[in-house]
Image (cartoon, rainbow, N blue to C red; front, side, top):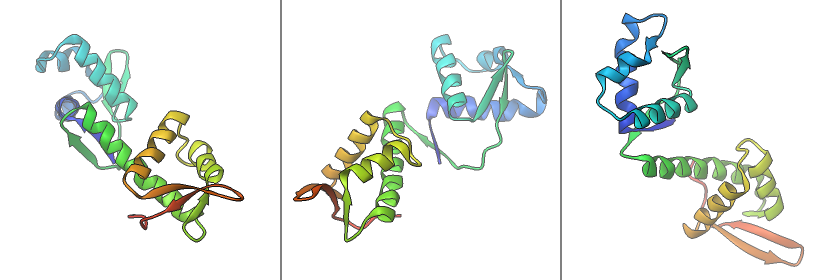
Length: 158
C-alpha cells in the first residue's frame, strides 16, 4: 500500500487526468498552471511522488508509473508517518512470528533481521519500531541467564 497526502493526491489525480493528452509525458509547467500551490510545495510534492514510485520526472516532463499497489490518502505528512509505522509494525510482526520459538526471540536475532533482513531498517527506525511495539504491549524485553530476549505478548495480527 502506498500512502500519500491529500495535496499529493490532488497533483497525482491531475497527472492521471492529463495523461491521455500527453502520451510522451506531461510538461511540469502545465500541471503547475492548473494547480494553485506554491513553487516550493509543488516541487516537494513531485519529489515525494517520485520517491514513492508513482511518477517519473525526466526533462521537465512527468510520466505516471504503472503501479499494482493500492493508494491510501491521508490528511498530512504526520499521518503518512503514522500509517507507515503501522505498516512496518505489521511487517515486523510477520518477521517475529516466523522467528519465534515459544513466543521468545533473541534480541540480537530480531534486531539483526530488522536491520539486514527484508525490511532493512536503520538503527533509529528499528529502535522506534521496537519501542512502539513495547508501548502497545505487543512485545516485552526480558532478561534471561543466556541473554536478552523479546517476548511476544499478543499474537501477531497478519
